[in-house]
Image 1: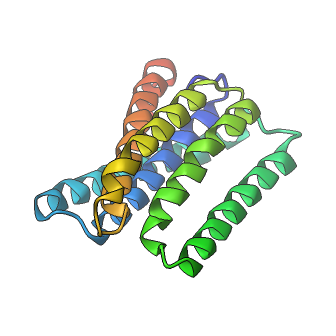
Image 2: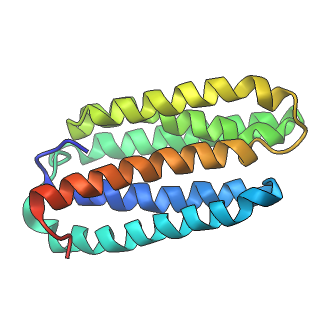
Length: 181
């Protein structure tokens, strides 16, 4: 994360950790047996990142945010993301293609990083969204040839990218601000 706002930086690290936990968890829906412990380890790492930097958010709450004066735009972005994910999921269920829900939700999440980058004044989020979008598009072909839920590949992709960005951001945070505690 490349921001001058300590609270935003800490929050994004914590959020990426929490979302890595969630995506690695979703990847455990139907993984190859040899991946299970790796997905569990990814979830644990995400939870640790979320917990450590969640405390830092509270510690730096009064330090300001890029969202000040624009919280309603952030709320609208989150609402649009949730509605797009839900509408796509309902469509896929009705078309009896529910195994693609994880892929669709992943795409919505990846694409939301572009407007989020503008709101948070942090273009590194565009890079994250671009990496995730490219990864998801590359997964389409192999996923078409499988019968399992798309979460078996999408969960690790999304979890790994969020965890990696969270860890790099954590190192930048510690280098610039010191301990999150």
